Length: 197
Image (tube, rainbow, N blue to C red):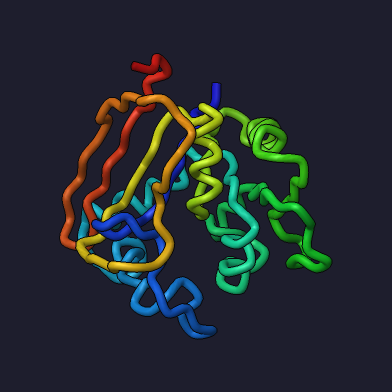
């Protein structure tokens, strides 16, 4: 059975992107610090997380904005690079063009349909929902997540796109599964307890 995980980086004050978006910095001024743990850190714990990160993932679900911002960097292989894990993009309208021989599929009939497709192509691997605060909140509200994985960077943005806004949910208990502290991020992984209080 697949584990469905929402995985995202954020600032300590809860932003997944910063203010002052530009063509050079589409996620906002200085937002690269959220992903320093992936690209430029050199810390052994972060390197181990990145190296093992794709081992258990069978498929990825992303929102359309994440796809549009990231595909110039991901190219045809998607976020997993040479591992070429399938990426299911939730969108209202599929783009007219996508990278040739790319790993992308576009689902236009909601998150449940996207999850069904991701589960179908993931084999025994996990399904990771990545990128997009709104998409993550939709999965939380629908009760479709098994785990939440947050990478909290030691920075305060003060403005930008918040990860958690008001959600239409009951109190939902989480169980701490893992905490890894590094200079570039504190990695928190929670199991979502299905019984609400």
